[in-house]
Length: 219
Image (cartoon, rainbow, N blue to C red):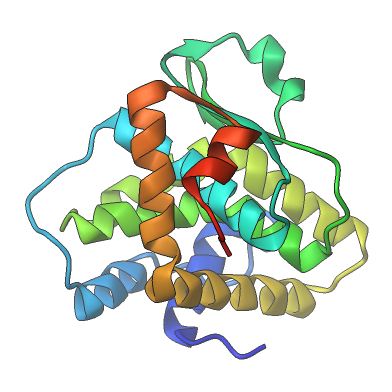
C-alpha cells in the first residue's frame, strides 16, 4: 500500500513509534507544517477535553466497524476518570494521569495485524485531526496526545516487535497505517467519526446496537 500523504505518515510514525525505535529521526514540527498546508477547517476554537475524548473513542469505534461491522460491544466516555483497575475490561482506552476517561470493548473477531494497527492508532490520529480542523497548533499537544493513547499504541508496537519485525519493517507498517487513516478520514470517515462523537457527547455510553443504528449501511 502506498500512503496518500507520505510526508505526514513519516512524521506520524516518528512521533508514535519513538519509544520502540529511538534512533529514527523525530521532527514533530513537520506534522504541524503538514496540517497547516492543507488546513481548510475552522480557526480559533479549542475543543474541550470531553470532546477530544469523544473523538478519540469514536474513531476507534468507526474504524473497527469499518473493518468488521458489529465488532463493537460498547463504547463510553466519562467526565471523571474511571478506576484504572477496570483497564482489562476494554480493548482501547483513553488514559489520563487520573485514570480512564473513555474506552471501547470489542466482540472477539479475527483481524489482521494491519487492521489492529488501524484501530490502535485511530484514536490518536483523530484527536490530532480534530485539533487541526479547529485551527489549534498541534506541536505543544503531541506529547500529551501520545501519552493518552499509550495503552493502544504501545500494545500494537509490542505486537510488531514480538512478530520479529525489523526497524525498517515496523516503519513501513506504521507508515502505511498513517497514510491509510488520512485517506479514510479525508474520504468520508471523518464525518462518521463526528456522528458517533456527537452521540457520545450527548449520551456518554453507546451499546453495539446503538452504534449500528447510528451508522446504517456503514461502511
